[in-house]
Structure formats: structure tokens, C-alpha cells
Length: 73
Image 1 (cartoon, rainbow, N blue to C red):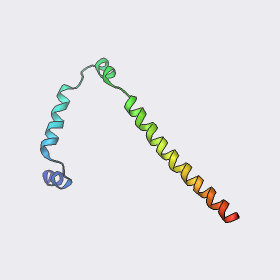
Image 2 (cartoon, rainbow, N blue to C red; image 1 turned 180 degrees about the vertical axis):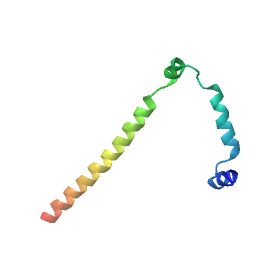
Image 3 (cartoon, rainbow, N blue to C red; image 1 turned 45 degrees about the vertical axis):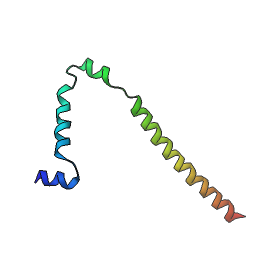
């Protein structure tokens, strides 16, 4: 049943076994783990999403302002 579910979802079983073998080379100590983590990409992604949301909000408020100004004229 699991195999049928994975095939329907479009996830090949070979990719799942390859991803599972990647865990064999994981760092074993906290020092190795903390030195290999970089949050710069995560921070950049969060800022990009925040900028996109802010752009949508400003566009929405600006269009409401223009529509209100045209209706009042």
C-alpha cells in the first residue's frame, strides 16, 4: 500500500533510498553540527517573503486610496 501511495504521489522509491543514505554522513557531535549550519540563506528567504507581503499590502492600500480619491472627486 505504501508503494502504491508513493507511486501515485510521484515520488520514486529510488530517490527515497538515496535520501536515506545521506543520513549516514551526518555530523556526530554538536560542535560539528553547529559549525556546519548557516542561517544566512534562511534569513534571506524570510526577508524576501516579508518584502513580497509588504509589497502586496502597499499595493492594496495604494489602490484603495486611489479608488477612494476618484470616488470623492
